[in-house]
Length: 259
Image (cartoon, rainbow, N blue to C red):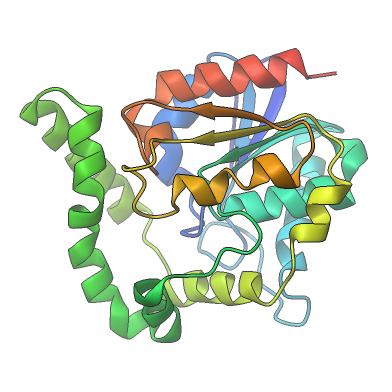
């Protein structure tokens, strides 16, 4: 678990890969501005919590309860990154007294369906992993190219990010299972139950090749009063390619609503 900084408490929920370590640049910037907590999703090495198939998606809700208890927090802002948005949404809907504000960062909204390539990965996660890894640079390169001005900066980011991935490897079967769980549930009613001030953050429409920005923006219609911010020169990796900008946006919002 990562728990650093002072000020308004924020819990950053990782994406489908489940590892907080992938977000280290973002966490370092956030800790300068608030108290930020992050953790590994249950079922992955380092989470300290097994995944119980009998309770399905509720594993992630119970785990977040445990995070509150471990850190001594009674209330906190939640930021769900990509898939983590579903966890943040369900928690804000079912534990409104604990959530001061809610942020979705490039998160798929209710109704999202995996594309054909993603469906093949979910159906055969281990067999699909080599192709998934091999094609990742091609999917992400347009965003990385747009984020940095020089080849040296682009290569340096790519090397650092690859090192983080190698140090905290994915579990393909766990990732596929998370998508399967999400597809079996209807999260739309949860949006009606959200009472916390809400912010939606995306990258530019033509740069997010993982979750289209228009899919994330559906939250603007689903959650009344939700605010929206678009990060320039970014796509799905905006919190990593522009961690200072992301930290400023998120902490500005949660500090304004951290009551």
